[in-house]
Image (cartoon, rainbow, N blue to C red; front, side):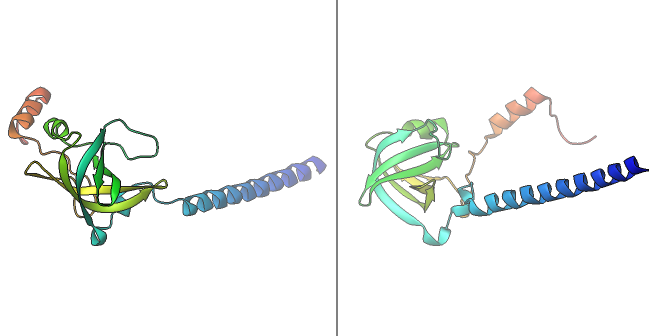
Length: 165
């Protein structure tokens, strides 16, 4: 009878300690997520405070750096000094090749701070008489439009031949 009491007491203590441990871990996770800023830069995009910068491309950064959003960045020299302008990873190859050192550009977007660094999330870029819309008014990056030829090629590759029969 004595061993039964000990095992019941042992089970009760184990359950109580497990519950306390789980409550402590849940409190730590909640505190950690509340203190960290949002990771996505889209949530920071503020269309009400868009700015337009006229300047010259000083450098084109295509390789990802730690702490910076993926995709192409343009370092633009204008009246506000040097600005890191994020244009994202979805520019077409011809657009990427057209953007180079010394190119005069006009970029419109929202300034954000990402890991302590200020950058412009570009919504629209004008260069060489061409206007490129990079983001929606809410800061979502646009993917390049697929042409009918590229869709036909993809459909042929995967054997897609129409709707239900």
